[in-house]
Length: 363
Image (tube, rainbow, N blue to C red; front, side, top):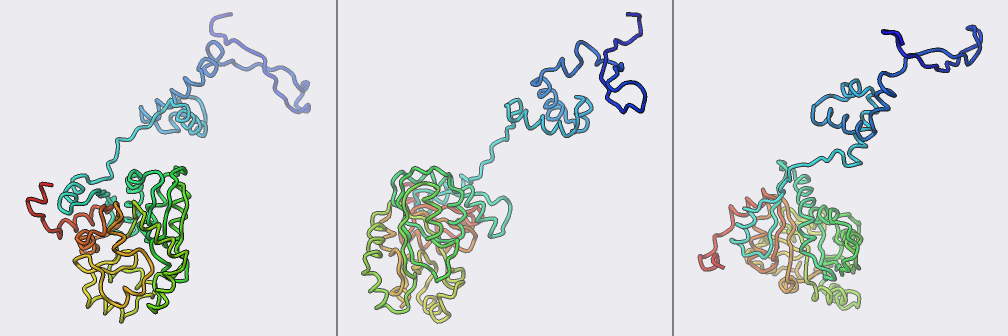
């Protein structure tokens, strides 16, 4: 072939007959350079590696990669996705530590709790964001504290709701989950124990025992009659056998019973006079962790404080900085043995927590 002339190959060019020449007449077009052309010479994996190298390592934009690799920009996106699928691109992220181990050790030492998890809040002080962070990062921690075939007493609450929805879908734990408190009112809420309990057994596997009564009964006599029902007695018998409890801690200023109208102003005043600093499963307690001696105490259907004290691992799942007094009192009264909390709440707790005696600290 004379120097300077291109090698030609025939290409079928369809066209209308009116242009002259027969339809299907052969025309000549330049062949791709090289032996079979660039596209033929480059294997698919090589093309994936090239595109990945240009984009991830060399920092080229997708349009530049498209020009370099002689493909469309849309195909660059598809090739990058395929490179990740085939393992040609392996994206690694330096591990994020969501826990504040230093605060955990300090709380454990000061309060004598068996287990503590302090979770970072992601820089937000918004209550919803704190609950989300505690739920997301606290779920694998709590999951590790649960054993197969555990009997688990379960309360309701927004933070517990977030955490339970983040538990892994193991599906074979064989748990017995027991509703620890009756219904707050007649309207079902996704934050109530009966709804959260169904999610818990669906994710981890097991059975759920519901407590189909109101949490608060206007008259003690009616409450006592309901406690004698077989279904209610069965729930309380299972609560006696619980190894783990998942509970929240409320306050008079931040109570679901006030929010949903179950606790009126007169009852709040009675509880305040009795020194109420916290609430767990509908039971209001004072700074010593003792149940407040008001008429409210005789109208609640749910786990008793005595039962909570006998459960080996009662895990309080809380968020926010307004629960310090409630946490301290619950620890003092032996109501909780473990704590899952955000770092801001932990810092507030440590700021108010009493320093133990040297003898207790040594333990």
